[in-house]
Image (cartoon, rainbow, N blue to C red; front, side):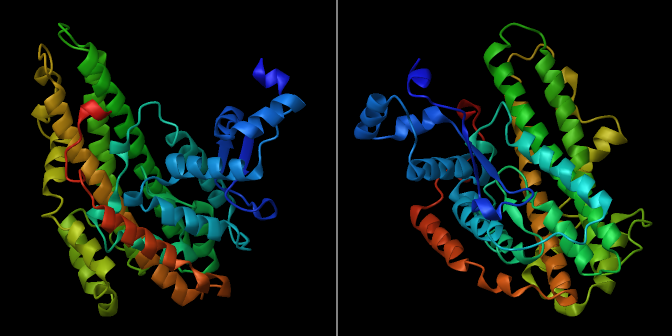
Length: 401
């Protein structure tokens, strides 16, 4: 009735750019009129009621949209949400074009955009599913800032959300010898990263239902769904790492990695052919460390159990049939998979940083990218350090989901 009396129309769509600057893939916030009405002060509400017409102020619309962006799109300070919001606000208002894309790039970018939108609208979510990459890796995570010149990352809340259309165009524009292969692998890696995040969200929903509804049941369908999810996530995680290795290989024109069946041989080839000045970079050292056989030992064991040997006992139905308290085992597996998803995401950021360095050499950035607002990143980090990271090291608690 209030909507009718006050002539409250449809919701507002607020883009993360000035109206005349909005381009393809610009993030959009859907601002609900009811949200706006609740934020108005008493006198604004009284005035609207007397006039029988409600027109929200631009200030209220903008502040509400900003809250939506930070909550639904960018995440917490530990996700570098506030500085990424400022960075994307700056980036989306620049004048840049996409003139070098091929039809396959447009198709892949369209698909990734739709996946991103859907994956940010998961039914089951929790702040505990935010990756919180900055406390995990204070050197690699802030690289999301400088790489905006070639491979912009919009958000690292649940997955690495790259503005893929711009990144694909940067790779094409550079005339890199292996642009086709780099774009193909980047698409595959981003897809796997999002699929992993999606299944982790689904697992949270399944575990919540198991915890609250199992009772005396011998087994629930959600238990089967969760262990099936785990099997798929293990495969995605291992595949993602292999493809990031190939992606970095093609970045440096190393094309013979795919034919090597043993991971150690791929590592040896990279060590022999990656230029020494690249090896001195912190992000290459991080990349090298996290693709080592030692780092991947547990994931490899899980993958071998799923695909080749007699299964993974802690993730098989007999571990849950008749078990009145299966959550601890599911939670233990979830913690490992979520932690590996975060590591894979950091590995991807390192890979994009290596690629950006090469693209800058091949195609120097436009002048507009020399004014990246780094002060916002620095200020956000100062505030976070001052506030502390209490609770970061705590394991996921299903009471909070």
